[in-house]
Image (tube, rainbow, N blue to C red; front, side, top):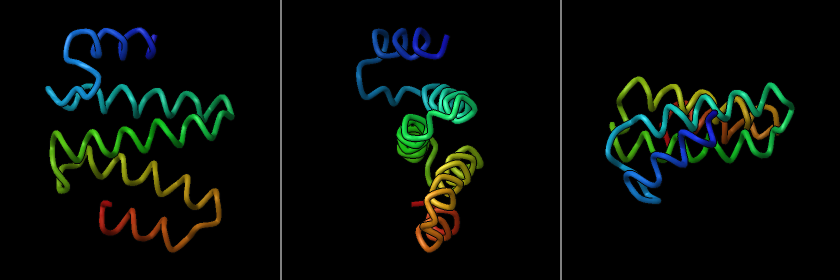
Length: 93
């Protein structure tokens, strides 16, 4: 479902879709599913893409960007990269 929706967005808006936050929302959800399937590396990549997408579409101070930061910070905590997790969470990088 997520792959199909992302594929449709790519066809409609191009590879680097910045038409709206919708692609970011799909990436966040897909990353969550992959995390639940214990596919942590894939989840981490999807959440990184999500955060970059949110930052470029809604900016650094939008609540959706905050959602992406929390997900990415969770991955860094899992990897025991606590300083990076705090940096991502606090500075929304």
